[in-house]
Amino acid sequence: MILWMLAFLIIFCLLWNCKGLLRIADINDKYIFITGCDTGFGNLAAKTFDEKGFHVLAACLTESGSRALKASTSGRLQTVLLDVTDPDNVKRTAQWVKDEVGEKGLWGLINNAGILGVLAPTDWLTVEHFREPFEVNLFGLINVTLNMLPLVKKAQGRIINVSSIGGRLAFSGGGYTPSKYAVEGFNDSLRRDMKEFGVKVSCIEPGLFKTGLSDPAKATEKKMAVWNQLSPDIKQQYGDGYIEKSLTKKGKDKLFQNIDLSLVVKCMDHALTSLFPQTHYIAGVDAKTFWIPLSLMPAVLQDFLLQKHKVKLADPKAV
Figure 1 (cartoon, one colour):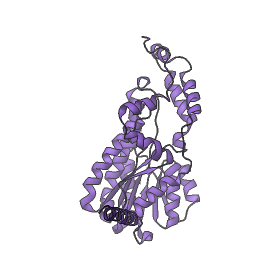
Figure 2 (cartoon, helix red, strand yellow):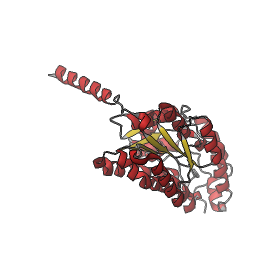
Figure 3 (tube, one colour):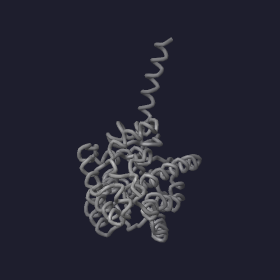
Figure 4 (cartoon, helix red, strand yellow):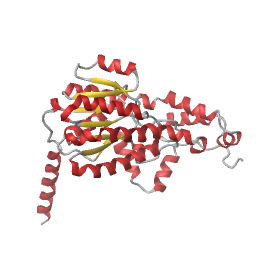
C-alpha cells in the first residue's frame, strides 16, 4: 500500500512539473505592454520579449530611456512616455495601446514600474514620505490595470504584477513595504475576479536585486536629507552617526544581493507563455532561502532576526 502511494506521488509530481512546460503558440501575433522600461527588470524584459517575437509596447518615464531602448531593440518594439501617477497620461496611453493592438486585444500587461521611496525608521517620516511610493507602486499600478483591463479581457490574456519580498515581510520603515503589501492584496482580488473571463493573473516577488532602484548611494542620500530635518529629540534618541553606523553594520552583515536580473524576467516569461502560469513567483536566491521562509515563521522569530541587523539606539528614553 505504501509503495502504491509513493508511486502515485511520484507520478503526480512528474505530471505537475510537465504541466508547467506546456507553452502557448503564436507568440508573433501577441502584444504585451510593460511599464517601467527605462532600466532594471522592465528594460531587460522589453529586450527579451522583443527578441522572442512579441509585439512589445514599452512604457518609459524619460525620453533618454526611450531612445536607449529603441536603439538596442528591433523595429517591432514601440515605446511610449508614461508617468503612471498621471491619470490623463494613463488614459492617453491606454487609447494608444488600443489603437495598436486592434481586435487582437492585449495578451500581456506587466506592471513593473515602481520606486523605493525613503527607507528610514517610521518616526523619522511624514505621511508624504509614505504617499510617494503608494502613488507609484499601488495607485499607478491599479490605474494602469483598470485602463488596460478591457484589452486584456478581449485577448483572454495575462496580467503580471511585480511585487517584492517587501510585500511578504516588512524589512524597513517607509512607504515601500506597505505599498507592496497592498499590491499583493490587489493582485489576489484581481486574480479571482478575472478567472471567469479567462484572464490569468500572476504576482512576482523578487528578492534584493542590484538595480537602480536599490542604489545604496541614493538611498543614503534620501535618508540623510530626512535626518537633517528631524527634531533634536529624535536625533538625541538615535544618536549622532546613526546612519553611518547603519551602513557599517550592513557592510559587515553582507546581506545577499542578486545580480542576475534575468531571474525575474524568466518568471515573467513563464507567466506570459505557460498554459498553466503560477499565481506567485519567487525570484532570487535570498528570497527563496531566507525572506520567504522567514515570512512564514512566527513574528517573534522574524523580529529577532531582523532586529539583529539594526543599530542600537543611543538613548531611546530621551524626550
